[in-house]
Length: 114
Image 1 (tube, helix red, strand yellow):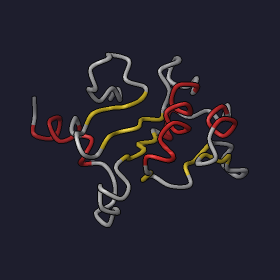
Image 2 (image 1 turned 90 degrees about the vertical axis):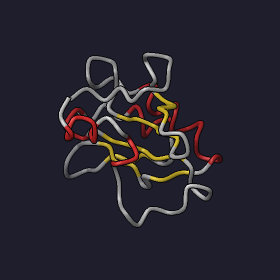
Image 3 (image 1 turned 180 degrees about the vertical axis):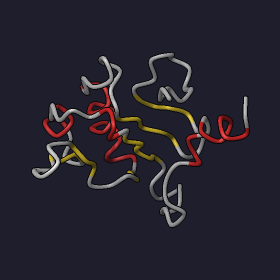
């Protein structure tokens, strides 16, 4: 595995360097926009997700969320039909680097296919 591959597998490397402190917003949304085809299921179940009229795709209002927004964003990841049903929304616990959703392997490993 190359250094680049190792870096890509660590979800903590995604995102802005000016992210809020993890104790304030412990969860991060990783959105694979290239896999989104605009079904809008995420926007139906979560107020953090909206449909962009120009692109026809969904987008999160915030990439960093607290405990109070966790359940709806997990649901958005679970209902996303993109990527052959595996979705394109990933919820990561910034404190542990574990994938909370969709977590298809059931072990918290980051499941974004590259």
